Length: 109
Image (tube, rainbow, N blue to C red):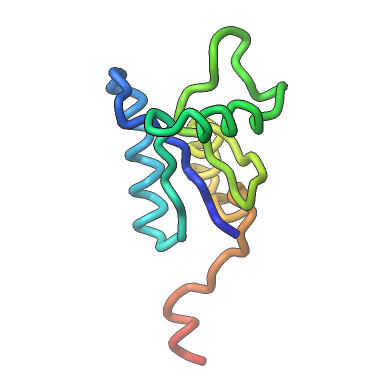
């Protein structure tokens, strides 16, 4: 299952850039395979992202802001949802992935 993180490289918002970096760094640090999709470079990808965010997860006004996270084509959530799952140590569940065994356990087998 491919985790896709929709980002915007040309965002003028420092907060959005920081949130995008937080998600990407976390995935890299935990060796979770992912694809970063820059919606500022592809109108088709931007439209796909907008179309695939459930109506109840969209903001009351305006368009959903990056980062937006999908796994295997299924919508996982935005940064706030990701942050909540990170704080509660449920990121693998949030991403629809099976939790990994600790590396110490893996080396014992």
